[in-house]
Image 1 (cartoon, rainbow, N blue to C red):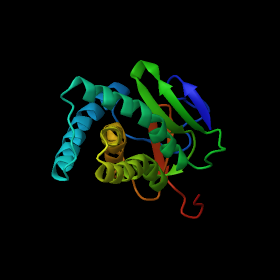
Image 2 (cartoon, rainbow, N blue to C red):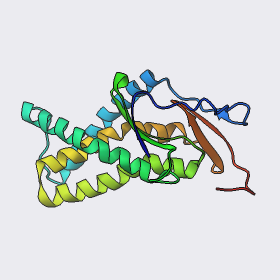
Image 3 (tube, rainbow, N blue to C red):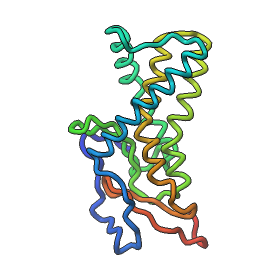
Length: 196
């Protein structure tokens, strides 16, 4: 596993078209981040309703609340990306795994530079939302602690890109394998006699 400061790495040796991969139709980085930002507002609204009905105090209407949220977001991001990486093949020893920060896009990411079954790919996208949401939801409900509540919300908002990615790949066949070249995702149907 490697750490990187910069854009998502691009394997120049990977030639998707000559290796039988198809290009996944997906938004450009800027459009993706815009759509994820819009989705994050919707996710935050849904969670605000849920918290209201289970009597957990929450607001982002005061300066201190915004500071709490930013602290929670900064704290949760490394854990969120680490959980993505845990699901990658060969974790933690594989040098195909990268956790990085793309300063120009203000984007943290976990990246696997290798073939992955679409099921594993979907699991890696979903895991931070599922695991951290459950943990922080239970802790917030029990303790009513505001910082924990903000960590719950920060993870939910931070998962908006993952949720958007799950939507984008929803129609890929179950026997597909997925591989990225930098930002762009490629896929092909796996040989059923040679599953990994």
